[in-house]
Length: 285
Image 1 (tube, rainbow, N blue to C red):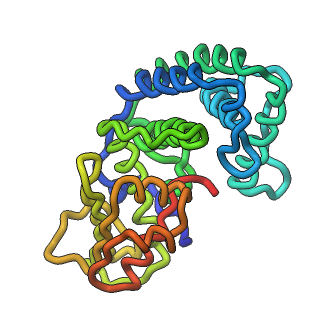
Image 2: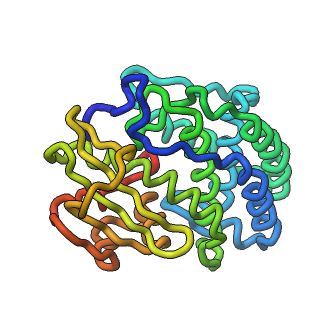
């Protein structure tokens, strides 16, 4: 896609800030409750290509430890020569999972509870107005407003819990408040998704997610060759994409591809703009 949109100090184009801090404690409790119900065979079930439930639990522990400063002897990930951010993240994730390949499930759950509790406290005390880590999939690089960094981390934990649920035969947890927060965070990728799509200033593209967790997100093409979520809707949009919540979050995390999402989406207006919006990705690939 185009040049990162967050390369200056104005991040208003990301839209209205959101506060997910109150959701972390419940998310951790839900994860621990889920893991404690698993039987030994569940831990070996495939979650994503190459990773089992055990691997993904270890990865979540790595997410927690990363936020706590990698307080693990012998593990200090660093960029290799010429390594991209995406390559570094994937390499470090795999190295961490490999390091814990022989860790038993009870030890993993205990470590997740201890580290997760510290992470919850850290996020609950976070200053949302400060600047945080960059969010590459939103184009907010090299830094993002802390509210987005914190929200991005919440979506990571929530998404991985759903992947574990699916691996063991459970449906998505559709509790409205956390799912609404996840969708709202994921849709902050819409301006970056459209950044390579030329349009006249003032052109608007809407994504509408139906149901209680959903809402409407309107990206507006601006005179500075970027798209923004900060502008109010002004008349009929040039294109609208309607999705259900399940399709939306799975599309954003590439649990399904845009061609699959298209089969259940309802598109209105300019086809090229609607199809461009369906290319949204809200994870590091």
